[in-house]
Image 1: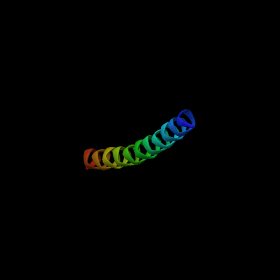
Image 2: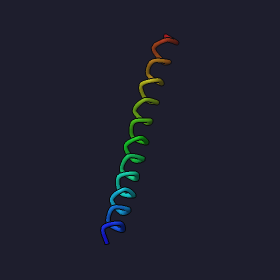
Image 3: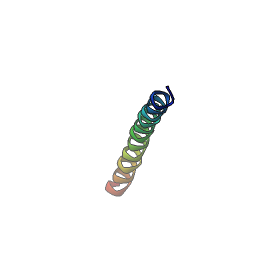
Length: 41
């Protein structure tokens, strides 16, 4: 039982980390786009 619960916890953590990474990537892209716009001006 412990092994199964540990595996589930690890899977949940990995999925949460992936979601966070996706959010961070979106924020980074937004910042890069803003910077490129300022450079053009």
